[in-house]
Length: 471
Image (cartoon, rainbow, N blue to C red; front, side):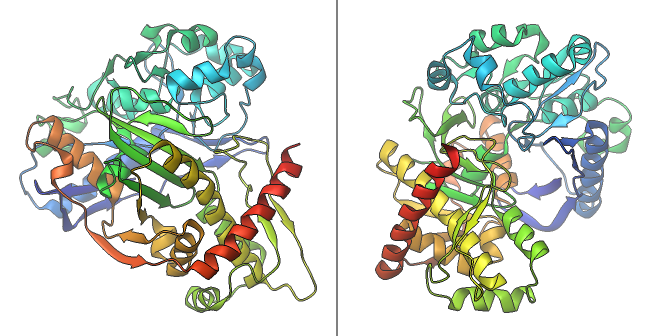
């Protein structure tokens, strides 16, 4: 959880920041949960720290973004009856059950989502099927952002951005999707009212009004999806740029203003706000794969490992690493896919396995890149952000070689938070358009034709093994 202060030029004010770690709970059957009340406490502590660092500076508004695809249920009193189920919770593989009621391709064409376990419809249906008493007690369903605002204000707004990432919105009509609600046995009044960034809330309730007098009466913009904010904050909200984000997981997106779009099969499409679409794909495996390799094998200090990785030739290890340790999202959307490591020899070293993993994630990004460019031909520039690339320039170089395009690193330290600030300023009329405040860029990594050829051959080998895996 992060809380930061930005000026009206969209620049982070140095030193003014609050951070709190998020605590997740995993279960043996594939669950990944967060305690919603604990997360409210941590979010409030982050705000406390940012306000303390601000030292009385006047604050005019609050923008907010939260993680897409989370969902929880609350009872009639507004108290949680479920934990927050995150995108990584894979217990709700509802393709068969939803497929008996709806056509998935028609659903995808309307909502930009699929019958995948990472999306809330699958999780809500899983609760209804496995915990019917809990489902009956749930008077309302929402993302964590809406739950936080309900605690702060006693009410909330479900932005079109959050509804789109939940698979509950017809993104062309900008209204809740009636067929999926019917399939889940939900009514619209079991969701918070649909709105957008500019439908601000004011008047914090206690104890937050006394705790944060500087924020008590300023407008708070309701939460939007972190992915859309990341694209905007890194300067990738026009159709000529592609944003690649690599943290624990990964995503590749193009974002631009459009009323209606054709959504290619294999890609998602959500909304950043009513004007901006966000099209692309997400990977369940990124930095988490690196952490797994580090935990499973003896590797040296990070600086030493980075030097070794950078010095290795492309695909020289002879390994095929299918990186689905946390299942697969796009482009195949196979939640029960599992990781596979082939080609081990007595000479194979742990550093070879790590390099193979980095290349495998980049190859997955390459598949998404080709689909996005086919759908959005103007998307030629690539901007990368996230700890994965910041902490490993060698990984950024691998990505440039796989894509065969220059990759510029974003110089914005908190692109998602900056995007939330830009959307808030635009919605409040302080700036004409968020695109008028360009993002800072850092080093650019140029591709090499020879390395690209090696990765193209590796990608073909990966594709063959992937087909064997999912047959």
